[in-house]
Length: 498
Image (cartoon, rainbow, N blue to C red; front, side, top):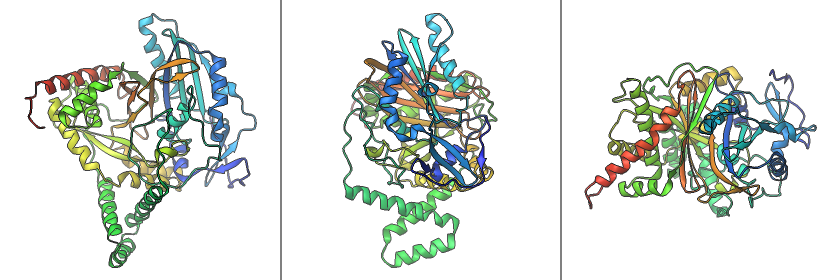
C-alpha cells in the first residue's frame, strides 16, 4: 500500500504526538524482504473465543493511547495521530487453518504465521493486529503482529502481558516517549508481579552516564573537537569522562571496522517469503544445572547450543564450517525495567560472534563464555542507539545506505528474553507456550528467538525461505546439542575446576 507523505510538518494537537527519531528510523526501515514487524504466537489451552479476546484487548490493551493512533508521515518524519474511526474488528481477526491431521497442525500454524510476517500492516490504521485461531490442538492460538516503530520487544512484552489475568495495568498518567533513561542490563523479566523500583538517585546516575555516552558519540563525528573536549575535561579532573570517552572511541572503532563474518549459505540476497519453526520447551532447571556445573551463565549455554545447531545444519549440507563464525546482532535494553510499560524504542544492539565451526560442545561453550565476557561494559549498544537516532534524521536513502553497512556484516538477529517462571492465564485459560521474533533488516535472513517461560526454554527461528528454506532442520538440532553438552558435563572429573 502506498503511504501518502505530506510536504509540511503537521501541526500538533492534543490528539497527536511527534514520533521520535529512533522510532522514525524503524518506521522507514521496511523493505520487501524484511518488514519491521515483531511477530509472535501464544498457544492457549483450553480454547478462548473471539468475543472474550476482543473484550480483553479493549479493556487492557487500549489503555495505552498509542494503540489507538495511526501514523502520518511527512518529509521531515512522522506523527502519531488518533484514529477517530478506530474499529476493533480491523485489529482482532479470526483465522481458520487448513484441515490437516493433528500431527501437522503445528506446521499449518507456522506456515500461516510466516505468511503474516511478510504482509504489510495497513498504514491507514494503527499498526498492529491480533489473529485468533479459535481451534488449535485442543485449545487456541493467538498470533500477533506489531510494527517495530511502536515499541521495542521489552516494552511490548510488558504491554501484552498486561492483558493476562491479573496483569498489571499501565500507569494512569499520560504515556509519553521519554529521553534515554540509561543503560540497564537485560535482567530477568518479571511479568505479573511487582518490579522493584529504582531509586531516584540511581535513575539520575544512569541517566547521566547514558547522556555522557551519547554526547561522546560526537567524538566519532568531530574527532578534533571531541579530543579537545576530552583533554579539557580531563585537565579539569573529569577522569571518569575521559575513560568513558576512550571506551566510546574504542567501541566505535570496533563497530566501524567490524570484519565480514564467514560466508555461508545463510548469507546472501533474501527473497520475499519467510518460514517459521520452533521446538518444544527444554526444562529450564536442566539448563541452569549445566551452567552451574561449567561455571557458565545460562546465556553462555544457550548461545553455545544455538551455534552448535547452526553449525550442524550447515555440515548436513556438506558445507565446510571449521574455523567459521557468524555475527548475530543482539538487542540490549536501555531503560529501567520498571519503565518497561513505556512505548517507543529504547534499546541498542551488541554484535555477538558465534563460533559455529567448533564441534566440541565444551570447547564451544567456553569460547562463547570468553566472548561474552569481552562484551561486558561495552558502550556499543549506546552507540548503535545513537546511530539509529541519526538515521531517523536522514532521508530514507541515506538511512538505508548507513544501516546496510551493519546488515552486510551480520547473519542473524538474536533475542534471549527471560520470561515469568509460572505459566500465565488469559481469559481463564492457560498460556502454555509463548514465542516472539523481532524483525531482521537489510539483507539479514535469519532471526533466532530464545525465550524462557513457565519452567522451560523454547527456541524458535524465522528465516528467509531463499536463504534457509527449512528452519525446522536447525530447530531439530538444538535439543541434541544441549544433550551432548549435558553428557560431556556429567563425564567431567569430579572436583576439577572449569
